[in-house]
Image 1 (cartoon, rainbow, N blue to C red):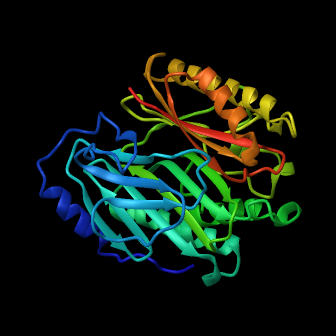
Image 2 (cartoon, rainbow, N blue to C red):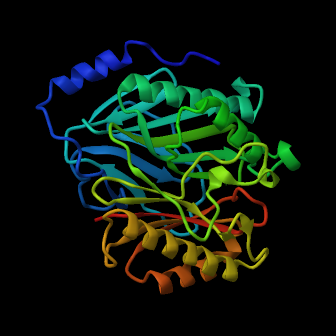
Length: 343
């Protein structure tokens, strides 16, 4: 695999961190706001990353780290604004753009698939770079990952691109997670970009992986779902109780439920979210029942948007949601929901 990192990275980042006042171990996770960037409110201080949705734009090294996700919003979509209570530093190392404070790092890789043999090779190289970066930078724990690729359902059987992505991810990580699986999302674009986009939050301290009692853990899926099981947990809880919930769909056990029925799939997905949040509360201090949710909803057929939005508003009347047109990792699944629950 390619060597995409400079071995001097940890020295540079460690020197920067030493120049700051020493701080106790992190007790507070990054904060997330949904924010319209064209409104009159100023951005919060210490922005670590901004994630925008719509057409890909040219990345710059000025201002906050910005990630553009090329998924079409189904309603006016705010941006995600991730910010810290500490000063932020930024940099670029080979293929990786990143921003960090003393406890957390936000990284992004946007790899051109044409530079690799196939999606499996591209993914293996990207994840090897992520793994090497985390170790070199001194943030060894992966808490949350997002993956966006073209034509996620193209190909038959084990040659389907999502299944090949899963193989490449496992190859790139080379067992480096040691059972510490991050929360994650893997979504397909509905237009061609030629880009494999991966971004993540890493940390100096580990989070707690949360699994759903209604589902088989993804990393224990049977062979029927591909040659390599997906490498993620259903959610991650940080030390302050922030709950990072992976992309969640209408799956019970390991089997998809309610093919071709978006209404029933939404109901099943909401049951899975409810079970995850309740399980997290039992395992670790997490936000109380009144804590706001920030939801992101991926919908395969835009014609289902009104129904899904209405059902979600009924279930979560006081919470914010972003709705995006996207393909889900299994062809029979019509929607997927991820969310963040903050203290």
